[in-house]
Length: 314
Length: 213
Image (cartoon, rainbow over all chains, first blue to last red; front, side):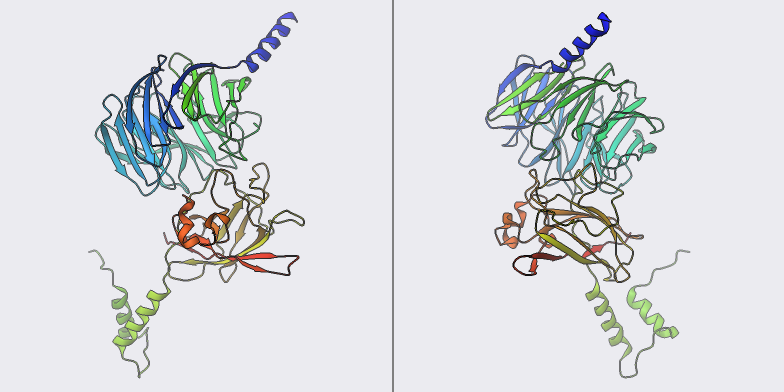
């Protein structure tokens, strides 16, 4: 009984645990999005003036500024931090080499991006333009490799498995689809959501997929069949982003304030296997991005007028 | 051997030669075919401008065109229109899914308020009663989402905007691009007010054109 009581106390403490601020980095104007290398050694923020600032972590030393151009909608960083991809509102997609600031590849598409994602080895880039099929590129050569089948409305999120063998898309027709990443052949699907799924992430072994969105429920899917293994209880708001910890034990879900998606919403961390919530944190302002580092830290960034604040949540 | 596809003109001339198209004696065949081609061209329509689906689409909406309930806050609005294909022919039985924020700018994610799945009638027409949507905080303009599907046609995802939206300051021709998602002026529709001063009602016409597969 004492043990149960102690475990209860630990849970209450854990749920209330407040993140510590890892770094506060000066920005010339407000930052609007944040990217993080899985190494945890490189962080970037796109600011309102369209400039990407790159820093080393945890020192917070400014490495370089890259002018991405105006109207950037989405940025993504390769896991090793070597590449930055950005898509703007005019449908222009560019990859830069972060070590030199040089432009690596550029492609023009009809529409602006819903999602961008690098494969874990950085050898492929998935671009999901709004309303259009996901296209897979080799960022080194700039060549298009293939595209996924067209779905109504396009893909709200795209994600590679850790071994690079699978691609998952959370599609605006409310279906989650899993493809062979070599050729785009569809392997499995799940059509149980009523609202649009907004995020999908594989577990490290690639056997399961966590996905969630407007339904406010986190579903753990069998990645081979698309079947639901478990669904969480309903959250207060839709889930916008999810990241699985490197050991696969935890899922961090960033909620979206449905009545105003520009307002701060809670970050909820739960156990992958059981769905049990272990921590909840309401950031001081809208979370701009973040993720797990390879050594198991969870970093999330918020912004004030002239500073980027990086929080260590776990 | 690959069969060569006839042009429309060649097809019409062949029809005339084989008797399946007859031309009145006072019309010359070439002139009649030219006139018919011109008439067909005039009837063609451009597919409606696509617009993104947004994060709040929900499938299995009720087939009820009364989105507004008595005493719902907001300006009552009736939206009417027809569904066409690019040849200008009306499409009966098209599915028209609509969803919008309520008067306060809130979307119902848990239920189906202000959501409907409608069908165009035999004349290709549709209509629904709702309220003028409020301003969703993360968007610039008031809008109603559409997803229109019909067999043999490309699905159309678009949004209806209102010329009376304060964002346009009365001049949507000049100001429509204040909403970054509005890529075409044609999606901003005029609003007609009717009813008596104590019960004003807005009316909007929104025709939709689907491209063929």
